[in-house]
Amino acid sequence: MRRPTRPKRLYIDFDGFFASCEEQADPGLHGRPVGVIPFVGARNSCVIAANAAAKRFGVTTGTAIAEARRLCPRITLAPQRPDHYVRIHHRVVAAVLSVLPVDVVCSIDELAAVLGERDRPEEIAGKIKRRIRRAVGERITCSIGCAPNRWLAKIAADLDKPDGLTVLFPCDLPGPLLNLGLDALPGVGGRMRARLKRGGIATVEDVWNATPGRLRSLWGNVNGARFWYALHGYAVEPPVTKRGSIGHSRVLPPGERSVQLARPMARQLVVKAARRLRREGLLARRLILSADFFNAPAWTASTIVARANDDLTCLDALSVIWAALARARDRATLFRITVSFDRFIPSDEAQLELPFENPDERRRLARLNTAVDSINGRYARTLVGYGGCAPPGGYAGAKIACGRIPRLEDFQ
Image 1 (cartoon, rainbow, N blue to C red):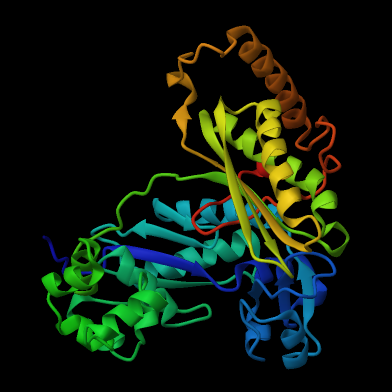
Image 2 (image 1 turned 60 degrees about the horizontal axis):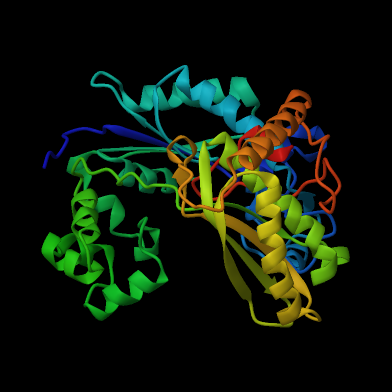
């Protein structure tokens, strides 16, 4: 395995991206503490992003809203606007592309690029920062890390925040990493940290001094050995992952927290997920519904879907599961609902294998959905919907999940 002699990867991590976007959009917020919350009037929830000014008061991602107000009485709590953040994201990517090819869009606020043989990391990083400021404004800043592989570059980007730059050469290792806790290493969560501790590994230095075989044994798979090689500066990159599911979720506002009142929102979430299936050329064979409650255990159920991506078939499947939810949790207070599809097959590979499938009906539903998608796409909003769904045009849970940036069509 090759071990580079110089930084080969550049990683860009934006600082409090959602909150910085809100600060940039409103001149009245410049320099003031800003936190982003899930929706208007949210109380029993948490801050999902904080800008640099808010972080100086101790407000970070995950801080309860009441605690954020206590820590920082002057904080501005702005309801999230995912569509706005996605538009800013695309402008940021374009700015970076004007300097370097973007290798991987890791998330809405994290990008990775490959450094050329003659690229000087400090010069390239400075140029990228200038292009981003020109494209989106002074309030949206990023921290950049450069290292022999993407994994180390991500760690380097976290070493100097906000608006920093850290360059790790192979000859520098492991020095700058030894003061970090294990949880600062990507891929080491609470469970893995406990497993490593049981195996006698409690520090980054312990990991460095272990062997690839030892870490593979502790991980229980080849990822442990990959982890060792990445830490030591080898040209190891994360494996490509395949999409496992497509779905949407919604934290319900106070006025919709019953099984009866939440059903229109669940139907709209299903329709939005079905649209994504069609855009990606997939048919789903299972629908999963999950519900979280304030005063009852979480509930999950699934039903088989007859290889579909049309709205009406998917809504019929939801009706089956929703009836089961109503029987099980009729009086409970809902907090969040999630609908997702999985067990995909490509649309162009589907064949009518089942005797009860009606090809004429499938073609009719396909034409109906094409017409609906065309109208809504033309006006970039939901003008045509289905009875029993939440009002067209309302925000229905299109969100920015880890590793996935929604398309603008997701917000229609």
